[in-house]
Length: 421
Image 1 (cartoon, rainbow, N blue to C red):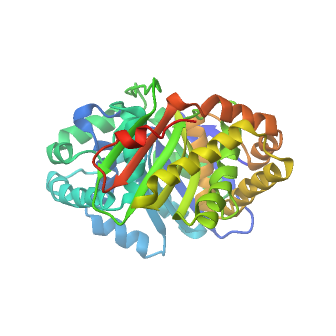
Image 2: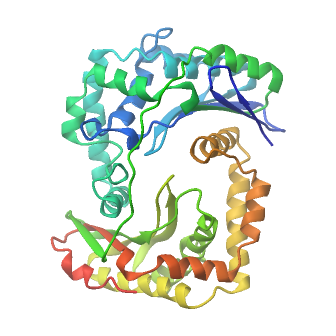
Image 3: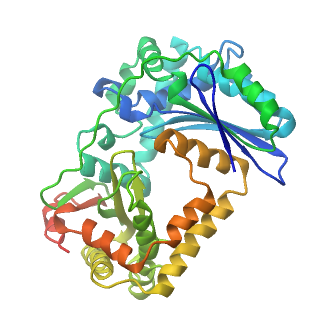
């Protein structure tokens, strides 16, 4: 259960009381992720998230923020996605005021000192190198670049070495001024809360957030005429690959059917891909499938780490599983298992206040509505084998195939020849 409130300045507040917990999470999410950057700003949103921890008007140094949170045993962090910048703190309920104070201070009053910006450039460049040295993670970025091209969805959230080095304090200020507006922010508080009392607290700490026009994001059309493959050469003992199709945006009526489809294909050790690729053929240690939905685009993809010499065989087997679920209806027992798998994971996650806060804030800011778990489960329960096959037939077509690989290969053409379904 939850309640939604809109403050005088236009800020949306979601209150999600929970029983049986002594914690509370404050999460502030801003629709200001990397999709809103201009080309010369690539990586600015993520960098801005870092800078919020470098000092505020009340707490001028990074250590002031860290010490204050650590003194009460808080869990706190931030994250940047292609759609959002979010800050959160999970504290014991008696420290709710402190959580609200610091999170609002970081959002409203970051100092952005020039000397800290210069110093943090080195930190972020090393973070970028870490991602690039982790093929299991980096292949996601290569896949999305292949899928969405030179649009904002196709670019890495962290930016490039050239853009990171070029950032000035004025660029951060301009980005904030264009996006950190009250109507573009959602504050969600979840856990042991007193709704009437805590709403007044939230208004006290966030009333200083002004409203006004918000800069627009760029669109990312999913137009594709033929299958595509991209190889990122790296000397590795194992090739990491991602193979998939354009999918559905967040508000598409068949998004949940697509999630069930990928659950059947590649979620858990009893999934089709795990059984076919790992258990029967020993081609990979990890193999999985999933779906990603943005506000106006999405995709379905399988991912695996495969012995270099057996990459073509693994691709063929993954495509065979795509084709099978497209041509043959899923059985009712397998579909029921997939539904229960999703429900179980959701219920387990919603036992903690930080996950509940994320559940509410992400839906409100990206979809402008919040489904409770019961409402979501009713949608999932209505999905039939025919619905699953309809999604597969609609999405699993050769011209929409995309393959990204990281491994000791220099030519993508041999792999492109395999991309038929």
